[in-house]
Image 1 (cartoon, rainbow, N blue to C red):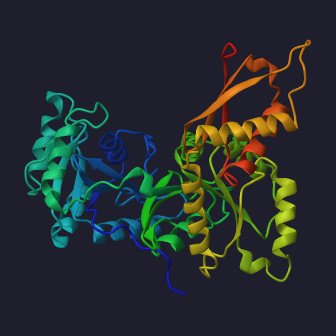
Image 2 (tube, one colour; image 1 turned 135 degrees about the vertical axis):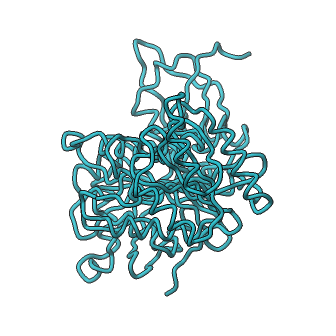
Length: 448
């Protein structure tokens, strides 16, 4: 079976390269305007290609951060990192070659310059960490590379970054496409415990070795955004670091990787919680499920490695097991997949798109209030000191997630159990059967 996906055509790719610790990830974050890539003084933090589709002035570019060229990796992943850099350069329409003006150039910078000359890719030389007259010598060394006048900036201080972005847009010119409409793109956060197969799934979806796959725990550190399309629908897969118990996090890189995984859930349209069919559901799986439930994001419980479990477990029995174990996601659909075999990948993506669209629906005020009245008549809140909670009317005020604002006599009269009951009833009565509904209560005097 062929790979199900393809990268998004038409968007020029701008690839950031350089030796370790010249500030590539800091520059990437400054251009994007958000701390997407991990910044840390430890060399070799970035391993995968970190990408972001940047929309500016009706044009789009895919900005790609890479690992340090010539890096010695403590997890013995140097070959995989070098392969990711080579693949990024093969796809690049423009390269940002970053050098460190403060420390000056070294032999590795010269080697990278020779490599880029042979490739013949359009290039902008970036002299980073230019923060005073003391850095002029490093700028002069950058000139001597023979790659044109360097763009001088300080990514850390965000000085000169806007000018570089103008240069990038000028160089890519009309090849940049109109930005994707946000409603058209389904952002998928792919989360789970360590070594559950997240990166393998991303590569299978994209049809490319887009992120490094390794048995080394903690290989993925950043939350890696990978845009692709399937059957005309656009997606962004967010590969994340494997989550673990906070007590086992050993350094700042793991801490920020975990934080980015949690942030990926919050910025996703749909969350894919990966669960290993060959292992029992553990406490960390339940914790991740609870984290997803708290954000009210639509979710799919994706059972990976199902090819290894077939014959040992039936889907219906395993689904019952999951429902009884991960109770924070009572309405989440369940998908059984095998990434290496491309088993059930496209249907799972289509299901994610359906959940995204479901969470984007709006219901009329009349339909909503009829459902509220029916639920209230079925079960009323318990009285509190002789008072009972009353709902005057409700209105849907937002989508993604569907958010209902209820005007009531006193929000404190609605206990948590009754609120959960109301959420379930509204999901049954309204077109939100598989996505969470967020309820908001506001006090108001009884209308006439």
